[in-house]
Length: 360
Image (cartoon, rainbow, N blue to C red):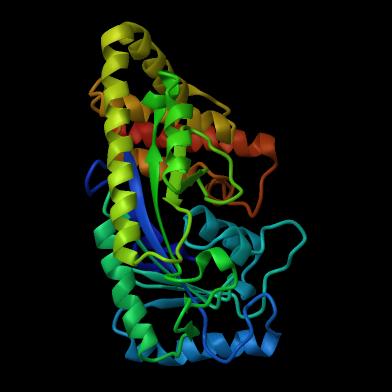
C-alpha cells in the first residue's frame, strides 16, 4: 500500500504544533456509533457488515468532511499493510486483525480525510476519530462533532431516549465519546512521582494506558490518558474534566523537569547526551531501546540541552521505528527481530545524520 496516497500519509498529527507539544504529542476524540437496524459488529453477519460499509461509502459524496476522503478496505490488505496502519494510530489492533487468532472481519475498512477518519466495523459499526497535534481537546472535539452531525444526517444511528447512543460495550453507551491525549512524562518517571500521578488519575475517573491504548504496554515514558465513562455526563463536561486534569499533569511534569535540572543537572545532561549518542551511532536497536533513548532525547530538546533534532523528527521516529515501518524501510514484507534491530538502527542513524547535516 502506498501510504503517500493517504491525506498527509495519515500522520498530520505528528507536526508538533499545538499547545504543550513538547509534552503532549497528540489529542484524539473518538465517537462510537452504530447504524440503526443492524446487529452490533461482533454479532453481525458478513452481509450486514458489508451493508454498513456500503451505506457509508454511498453517503461519502454528501458528507463534506469525507467527500475527498480515501476509503481503504482493511479486510483486503495483507498483514504488513494492516500493521502499518495500526502503527500510524489510524486503526485499532482489533480492526487490523492483529489480536491473536482472530481474523479480519469482513467489511473492515478505514475512511481517511484531511481532518478526521472513520473506522468501519470495529467493535462498533463506526468509530469517528479526529486527531490534533499537541494539547487541543476542544479542536479535536469540534472536528469529530462536525463529522458526527454530517454522517448522522445521512446514516441513521442507533439511539435510545434514556441511554443515548447505543454501543457494543456498555461503558461507551451515552455520548459514545472517548477523548485521550498521548503524553510524554519522563520527568515524573525520573523523580519517581509517576505512581502518585497515575493513582490520582484513576481517582478522578480517568484511565491511562500505553502507546496504543487498551492492552498496550507503557514504553519510552509515553502514556495515553482518557476518560473512563461516557454515560451520565455531556461531551462538554467530559472534555472540561479531561482538560483540567491533563493541564495539571502537564504542570506536574514541567515542575519535575525543573527539579531534575536544579538538583541533578550534570547527571541528567550526561544521561540524555548518552541517549543521543547511542541513537546516533548504534548498529542495532530493539524497539524498546529505541523508544527509551528517543524519550531521553525528547526530554533534552524540551530542556534546551540540545538544539536538534526537532520535535517533529522525534515524533516521526516514534512511528517509523516500529516493526512494519522498519520492514518497509528495509524493502521487505517482514523481518526477524535481529534484522529489524539492525534496520531500525540504520534508519535512526540516517534520520539523525540528515538533521545534523552530516553522514554516519
